[in-house]
Image 1 (cartoon, rainbow, N blue to C red):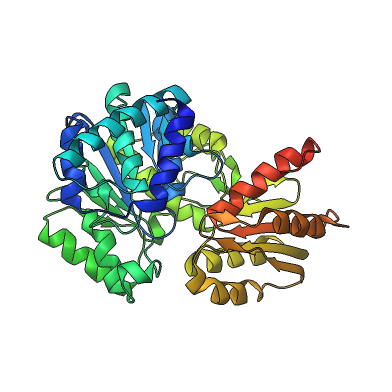
Image 2 (cartoon, rainbow, N blue to C red):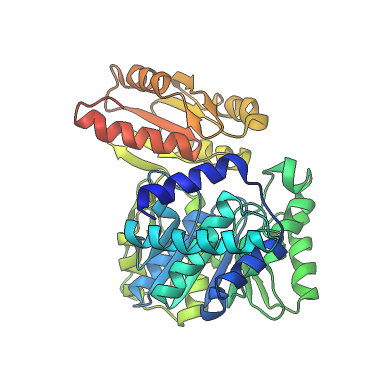
Amino acid sequence: MTYGEAVKYLNETAGFAKKTSLDNVKYLLGCLGNPQDDLCFIHVAGTNGKGSTCMFLETLLKERGIRVGVFSSPHILCINERIRIGGQDISNELFAQTCDTVYHAVKKAMKEGALHPSFFELLFLMAMAAFQKEQPDYCIIETGMGGRYDATNLILPQLCILTTISMDHMEFLGTSLSEIAFHKAGIIKKGIPVISAGQKEEVKSVIYKEAQEKQAPLEILSEDNLNFQEKHGKYIDFLNSNAYDRKRADGKNVLGDFQKENLALALKAAQEIAGKLEDSVIYQALENIRMPGRMEEVIPGVFVDVAHNIQGIEVFCHTVEKYFLGKKRILFGASHKNEEDYMREILKGISEIEFFHTVPICGRTVNVEEFQNAFEQMMKNSDKDTACFVVGSFYLAGVVKQYITRRKENVKL
């Protein structure tokens, strides 16, 4: 199987295969020789901040000399982004090789009565096969949707992390915070330590109950755990409260107060895995971190953010209001149609908006021509005091980053 054939197979799978049961995925893992049994895992669930927390943790452990594998979703530009080893997306060669291995295991399993896995389940199986082959020291696994019945919940981690939990995917996870928290807290395993972000009381009670039933040590971060004593400009500064030299490290690619909690979670997790981190490791990690699609300044004055649910949009608005005092121009596109109108109204509450346009997104497809026209209109007569934002779906973030690259080369999409 070539790389092109692997991508084609996965895209075709997205068109017909639905989520299957954990028993089905477990059977498929067995057909692969249970690669998950040979690996050490950190499992991450939550509503917002999963991707950022995984990136922070990956960078911290890498700076400590630990080789890390990461399985995350969705991707922005290239499907290989979903499986990383040693800080790099896996190669096209390894991607094709693992897809071929999984493809033949699936065909064998289906002859024995198993169901064809979904797009996400296929990629999870591929990640397990890739990690088994490359043997990273730790594998950071981000859940897809939910947690309890997610394919990734077949791993046995050494540590569980819960980022902030809020309303999202209500059509699948439930219409109350407690129902959604039930799904997310389902990654907690018997006796395995759990670190959680600060949560609303309704969510906390669910997490406490799950941890108690599983006899899992639980720590919920409070404001006291957010080890940030000073700020400088609009980017995160880390200042160790115990550092005598009061050395500051600027996270020049990390914008927004909301990232402090994600970094605090990652710091706590890294220390749980690797012991106390030297200040130099933390400083270097923060300076080296790259956060694609997280308030990312893709060209001067133009920021891309993948806030794609109500809580994410609220946090985005807080960041924009706090750090951008002049005029704003916004392109918005949502994949969650049931929340699109409400998110648009929240965004329109931002002060000094002089341009606002909604880009149509159907499934995973962005109307590229309309996007290009709207983007050029947004950029027209924009001055240095005007901040431009493209916010919403991961798919929209991918289109804008592709377009900006080709725009520099004067090539149309």
